[in-house]
Image: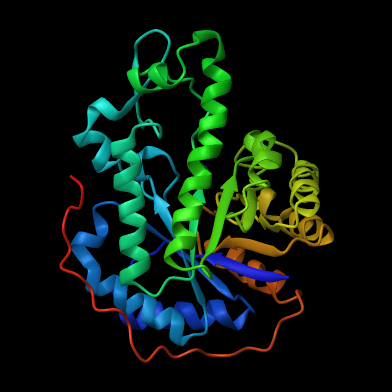
Length: 325
């Protein structure tokens, strides 16, 4: 059982990031997730490169989450997609003609831009995996001109949207593997999107399927953690995919903090391939205590032999540009 920790913090103080990565590694974590938004790499590529080196030196595999690219995926900062803002013609349009702040994945220009961005990161940074976090796909049936042209039968448009979403993801993960066949590909769903798990598990180029078991955030009973986890485990096991279950260790008041151990126990009992959580994340009544409890819980998972990797050479960074804009 691997441990994955999301690190959504500033890279601007090297002594702090070095300490944090060593602390993450000390609890037995093997993977760290970084989120990058569209504009950020252009502004602090040296800080990003330095932080990635530090994570590697601590013995952590690096997984990059595409934060709000095209507004299709979740990200730690609520910043809008620069691409969608600059290309309003790419936005999803519903049956009433209203446009939404999300790019339609059926637009070839958007796909070309997104795939190019991914290849850029994989080529220029020492990354071990790509993560798609809470993708927004078939939740809105798109009636844009592209979707209408690809599916002229308006009665089938909703089903077409779902099929084309799976095709889009399949092509994306295949492109990742074409850059590096050893690259890990992951997608993390919200519980309400678990109905997609069975179809996603059939994508050959997808390695890991996860679920954010954020019971308190969704105003559910903690018992739902086990229910949601079982749904995901059924799909991943039947298709031999790696499963990743996320512990909610953020946004907890004192009452909900007491249920952290129960949620963790239910996750571990399901025996997923990975347990995931956040490093020192936001909005806890007692942030220090929540993180200490999280560390204590993670240490109960049998740890693999700790090791440290030192990468002697990183790819030379290209001059940052606003690619495709």
